[in-house]
Length: 380
Image (cartoon, rainbow, N blue to C red):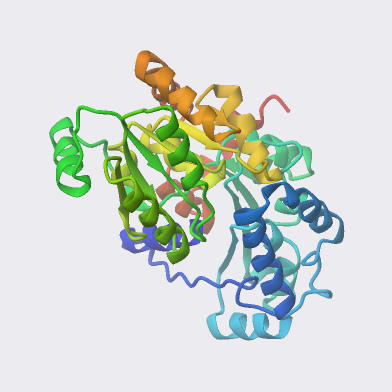
């Protein structure tokens, strides 16, 4: 998601003259890395609690921790030879050590700028130590908390910068006017703008608990308008479609994978999503009250997002399907509760933006880097 966002912003900033190529060495690399990605996706869909063992295994073994032990290094060097990049930007915790070392060995240390962008929102258990490589040229964090963790893990303060969320351009557009929002709800969703609209979100791979939540809302007899996203999973979409067919009086609409999620978040009354950094950052950026789906357990990297949301009180945590019905019933009785979350989201929104991130990555924003470093890690 962040790599595609960076690429999209590069097209919108022709003055930087950037040529961006996305390389995915884990899910398109050697079979062992592909297995790891597939296993992670299975855990996310079926048993989030199981990721605690997997996460700690990766923290100990560091499968991509050095160039010498890097699988697929030969192919990666061929990519480097063909592209001759000036900057290597990592947006994944497993790519900050072995791949940086490999690039410097192949191209020369002074010929490649190695930069990490970390979108995590909090430190502690669940924040991978692999995010931080003190030998890298720059560490960019989404929020102050991320930068504080990087400093604590050995990153030099002068190489740390807080630049905000790296989201696709649609999420950074101005808020919709009331008339435009009402038109979108009527024309795109077929719903009434004056009534509560809940968005049930899913991961791109289709991780969700839609049926459990829909059943819980029906048991509580909450007359809501519900929008459903199913990711890229035909199986998930078929299950929801079957549920709708069995309950024709319930107002539920499935939206396709290529839906403008930014417009959707600016139009609905609340979103229910797994507590990933991507979904959470998008909700905060759009000011959409957030409900964190923690059914089946919370993965380690989700737990740090939950801690961020609890610190700033920008979300409600849902551990059972009936919790959702209870919280929404409370919100319907007292709309000020959701309004309070929306207001706190505005106050916690980072001041940086993707344009600043791009300039910082390529090294043309040195003054901003120094300013942010002082502001963000002054207390360390």
